[in-house]
Image 1 (spheres, helix red, strand yellow):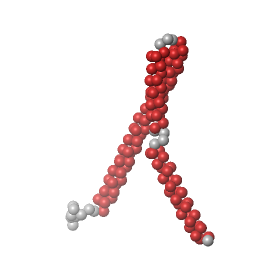
Image 2 (cartoon, rainbow, N blue to C red):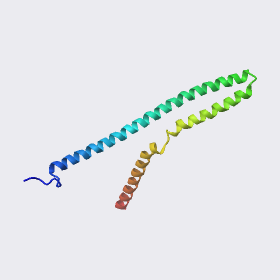
Image 3 (cartoon, one colour):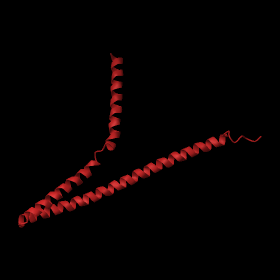
Length: 130
């Protein structure tokens, strides 16, 4: 007896489950790849910022030495202020990714979960004991 194509057979449900699993795996893989690209981009930015920071610090020392020796102090002072501002921006960029909500989110919720669980267990033990 021929089977009605609108009614899924047992073989179709297994195939649908495999397709769903494959789709979920592909989505997870895509997310991991995006995360990896984001990490690579951030790493490259940090490396560039560190190199630029080292260059600026070296130039700042050169300007300070030149400042003592030459009479053109006003131009050197302006350059020194510009270098200082750039260094502050770079330091802010380097530090901003170290302490983001994303990096603190998991430990925060673990502390809330286990701290709350500890309080509940403490209440239960106290009520049983006394």
